[in-house]
Figure: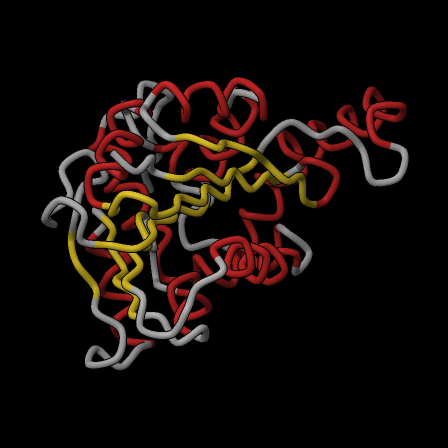
Length: 243
C-alpha cells in the first residue's frame, strides 16, 4: 500500500491512485453516502454542454465523471496520469466512444484552443502546481470556452441556515473526515492508507474565495462558485476571455 504526502510528488500521487483504482468508484460512493452521483450531475449541468462540443475531463480516473458528461452528447476525452486508473476505466467503457489519454495536468498533450470546455473533479488539489495547471487548462480551451472545477471545499452549513450553523457543521464534518473516513475506507478500499492523505489534502485545501482568486489570477474571467452539500463540495465556474 502507498500514500502520497502533502508535497504532492507527481510520481507518489500517481502510484497511490494506481493502488486505489480497483475499488475507487465503490469507495467514493460509500464515503460520500451516494452524493458523488449528484455532484457529477451538477458538474454536467454547470458546463451546459451542447451536442458535438469537445470537452476535456482532466484527472478523470476511471471515467465515471466522463461518462456522465458524455450523456450531454458532447465529445468528451478522459485524461489522467494514473495508468492504473486509465486501465480500470477502459475496462468499463467502449474505447471507440470514450477515449482515454494518459496526460499530466501540467503538460496536456493537446493543441491550443482545442476544446470548448475543460473540467476537473476532485483532482485539482492533487496537482503539485495549481496555478500552472489552471493556466494549462486555459491554453487548451478556446476563447469564450468554460472551466468547471468540482472540488471539496469549506463547509458553511446546509441551506437555508448557511454560516449561522458553520461552527458545529464544520466540526462534525472534520471529525468524519479525519476519523470515520479512513476507518470506512479500510473496509471498502483496495488501498485504505491512501485515504489518510486524501482526508489531509481536503483539510488543507483553500476555501471557496481563495480558490476563486487563484483561478482568476491564472487568466480566467467571470469566476463564480456554487456550494453543494453545504459547502462540502463547491463548483467553480470560469470563462476564458475572448482576446
